[in-house]
Image 1 (cartoon, one colour):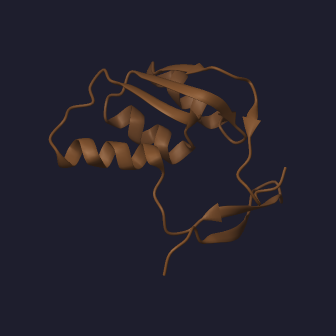
Image 2 (image 1 turned 180 degrees about the vertical axis):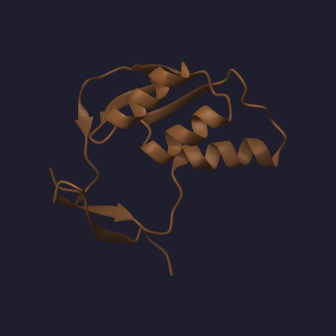
Amino acid sequence: EAGHLLKTVEDENGERRQHCVRTIHAEQNAICQAARFGTSLEGATLYCTMEPCRACAMLIINCGIARVVCAYRYHAAQETRDLFAAAGVELSVASDEILQYRDQGA
C-alpha cells in the first residue's frame, strides 16, 4: 500500500479540511534524522516550504533550533508564530502567499 492517505477533520471553528494520516511532517523527519545520527540542533537554522504547524513548532523549540526560514505562509500558523515569539525562535518567511494542500479547501 502506498500513497498519501487523507482524512477529513473538523477544526474548532467548524471548517472541514483534509489532513494526512500516516506520515510525519518534514520538520519532524529532519529532527528525527538529526537525533538518529547524533547531530545537535542547538542554534541551528531549519529551512522549510511552509511555516511549521503547532506540533512541529513545539519540537523545533524543544530541540534548540534558533531560526526557521520558510518560503510561504501556512494557513494555520498563528499559534506557531506566537510560540516562536515567546521562545525567541527567529521566523523568516519569504512570501506572504498562503499555500493550501491539494484537496484541502480554502
